[in-house]
Image (cartoon, rainbow, N blue to C red):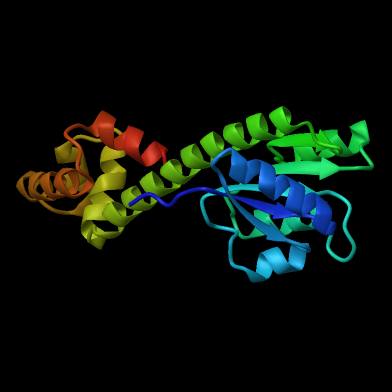
Length: 202
């Protein structure tokens, strides 16, 4: 079952959290609020489905610092930055660092809802891609050391007899290994195998 996405709101001003939470819930979205970056990190929400609506300027750990921490833990949560001290420079920097969007306070309701919708879509794509990579890696991990050797020689474009010569065995044995590699990797051609491994950047 797919995890329902949430909007994680992080702002040190309770009134703003309450107003945004009310808006999002009225649009049928699940909103979870935090009054500090540390509280968000402590909640173990960094790898959940959804997006992060984050105040840029907060006491203690600010929005940029939290963005940096999330990149370190490979979080897929898209970030929508909010600021009452909006500057073009800060917005450009946030976007360069991977932010989904940058909105100034007071936030326009429609702009926030549109930004959240786009962030949810981005997060879903990222999570699907990550799940696909994990599935491919699991298939790769199921290969024996010899099957891995055969795989890498095959994707170099070598024929069965060339692989056999390089590994000091006979072509018949390589055909058996090749069949097992193709079966375990769930592909029917070397081209498909190369395409699959390309998703892992192997």
